[in-house]
Amino acid sequence: MAVILCGVTGQPVVETSRLLAEAALVAGLDVSLSEAPAPACGQGGVLVHVRMGDEVRSAVAPEGSAEVLVGFEPLEALRAAALLAPGAFVALNEHPAPTWRMRAGLEPPPRDAAARLEARPARVVGVRAEALVRRVDGAPLYGLALLGLASPLLPVPRAAFEAALARGGPPDLEARRHAFARGVRLFEALPRRLAARDGAVR
Image 1 (cartoon, rainbow, N blue to C red):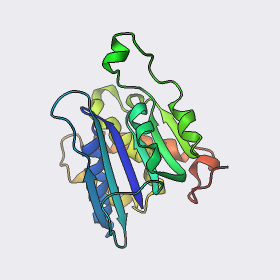
Image 2 (image 1 turned 60 degrees about the vertical axis):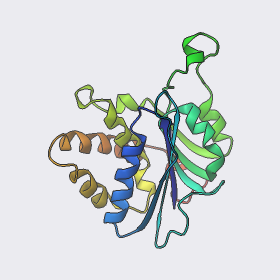
Image 3 (image 1 turned 30 degrees about the vertical axis):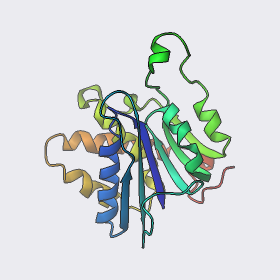
Image 4 (image 1 turned 30 degrees about the horizontal axis):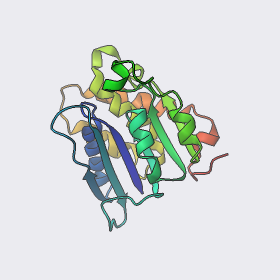
């Protein structure tokens, strides 16, 4: 299975990707994680490929092969759309990271990212990721909520995710578990056309 995680510098894309890879290892899977280089400063794009299965032969998912996309930022999710397989599941944070052109009033923020991804076709669940975590937990944990939203479709049991979360140690462990569980509960409330594990778009 191929999972793509993407966003911009400053978002917890890499940290979330590493936790996913660790959970897959706990589950006994062969795992590869490949990070696209991010710029040293500024709001550059961050793209991570996580591949897992009985045997992973390539670190990078070719175009049209990724079954799951965790998009921390809508514009970056659109840039990664070519990697998606038909019927892929997209957990999308709909809150855009403003570019300098947006801040200068030269272009509006994207408002149709979910619709453009659905046209691929993909099963898109758009959320305001920051709203999935408690304010006291801190913004970086919203990556765990997005991962929790996609997790039931991955070949990684909940116990493996719990073990990976626990390896971070006692500090913030309850908050990490809470953020991940919020995403899982959101998935469980989805209609079958979005939550189907066969990848079909109905």
